[in-house]
Image 1: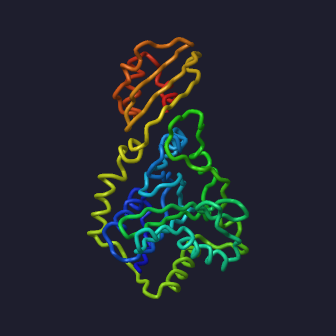
Image 2: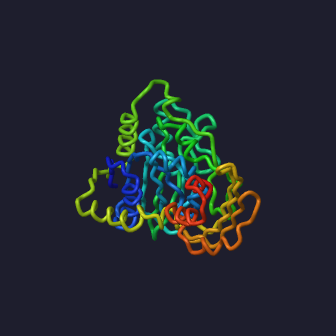
Length: 315
């Protein structure tokens, strides 16, 4: 087994690295890493419907779509991510308990009463601290999970705060759970680096063939290529979202405005707009085929004579 302590904290690179290791290596792999503040959405989710768009933008939080399904998670420097990649037999690869049990073993050694939940989460006293997801590629399984250790939970809550009534046909929806940090349940405080070392040491003790692996220059170049071509692109992170309808309303310069947009493959199919209770005729002609990005939408609303502040109603 290759044991990788990945000191890169770029979420685009780290999520790309998981796909690269899954598809291009034949060894079993264990990897730990941390990211700068970021939101990681499941492959089949509607990114727009999973996050507080303007909070994320204003706080420079990166958004990355991962290879696996499941729900949206929040990463920051207080969250430790673990990845297992294993070989196995087709039809007998998915096993959440197998891959999360080592984490529970370490926490139990530390005196933390962590356990499996009824879903694919790990919990302490009913509060979630770890979300997990898996992806099968040929005869290899990728399992990855979060470990909230000392995360900024206020940022997590704000970044993932959405109004579900604004979205129809929104793809796979996240199940929102109350969360906690592992550090709040330790009998004696330890640093996240110490916690990381304890996990590595336990994995090594359970896998006698475990050996350190460091990304080569060739690895870094190929992972970066995957970042450039896929994981840092708007088309993958936002445009890949399934077809959905977004609606919103608010007051702009003392006038009530209502917006409805139908989006598919990152483009606006249909639009409806009411200003001061009156439908704006032919509005779909202005929006149809427009990429659902701020700069594109802003050009149209300015052309309609709406103030720049109206843009916030469209996302």
